[in-house]
Amino acid sequence: MKKFKKYISILLLAAVLAACAFALAACKDKEFTLEHSYSEVYTKGNATIEASSAAFRILKINDTHLVSGSTKKDQKTLDGLKTVLDRTQFDMIILDGDIFEGYSAKLSFDKPAAAKVVGDLIDGYGKPWTFAPGNNDGQRGGSNEDIIAYWLGYEHFLAGNIEGINGAMQFFIDINYDGRLAHSIAIMDSLSLDPDDNYDYIKRDQTEALIAGIEERSTLVSIFFHMPTPAFEKAYTEGEAYGSFPFSDEYPVDDIPGNALFDELTANINNIGLISVGHVHSNNMAYYYNGRYYQLSSLGGYGAVGSDNTSPSYTLTTVDLTTTDSRTAYAFEKLSA
Image (tube, rainbow, N blue to C red):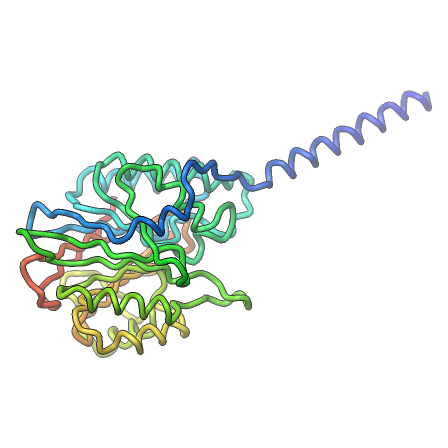
């Protein structure tokens, strides 16, 4: 009997150890299988798109916070997004940060799988698309560099960066129309967390590189990154609301104080027509202030904090390529499934 109990104890111990090993294996983050090196980004330079119409339409998607691409909330998000994609005319897509959840403890967390689902979906529409990293995207299960390197395998994905500056993505997308440069789009990385676990901010070298690129171009420039700057509150309190675009009854943003440096350095730079961000899981807003629009887009996924109170939506920005008047060059529309 004692020998039998000993065998039972050994079997139970083996079962417990096997269960622990399985749990540890399940908790281990899946790794990206990369056919491209991130360093290829430095060879890309700036991109060019030939517009077929004077109205250039940019569909912005942000804060979907996908866990794996296959959870119930992820499926609901992707189904709604596909509905919007199918019924919307657009010329390019910008994934404006926090496409992936950054701190999920769920066993289902699988960033590489989610990246494939997103890449397959977006690239399937045959339009150019790109990615401005958010504060969550590179936190766990693969860095922003891993995500970008993975998406380099897609035909229509645009990427670029300047070696030696902060951030994983920074480049211009020049829009040609009627035989000339008619508009330019700047993509930036607003970084993630600093060593003290506070929100990081856009650094001086990034901003100076941006300004140099703007000054090379004698055209209106739209800037896309993820986390807002203090100037957004200034625009809300002192600017002019874009009439038909939804906006909050009170300013919904806890701005990134360090991004005051970006505001300071760009305040007097001509030809900035739009600064467009996400990050804030509240309502949408667009205000004209200091000769440019400050536009913020709400959450885009059912896995994002706040989705119980705010339905996911996306922003369609239409740029008039025939004008350099920043006040009249833009039209904004909130899109929901």
